[in-house]
Length: 82
Image (tube, rainbow, N blue to C red; front, side, top):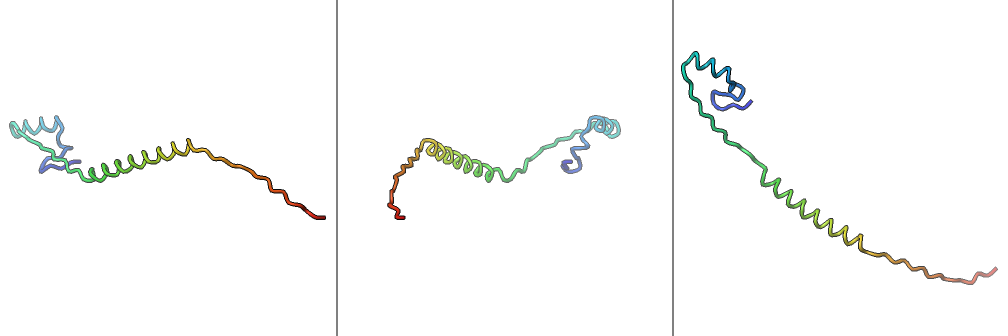
């Protein structure tokens, strides 16, 4: 429930307003909602950092997938005496 002064969001019901209007005459009500949002800057920075890291990871994975590994075997013979 959002409280704004004496009026709550729960009280803004057309039937309740009509009943109030009948009891008190015409009622005029202005409601301004001011959002109070925090943390958006931090989240945005974290998303940008995650995006940079994802790009770097993709570049690294691309390099790994293009890399070749060569394994050469050189036989070494030794003479064994009985």
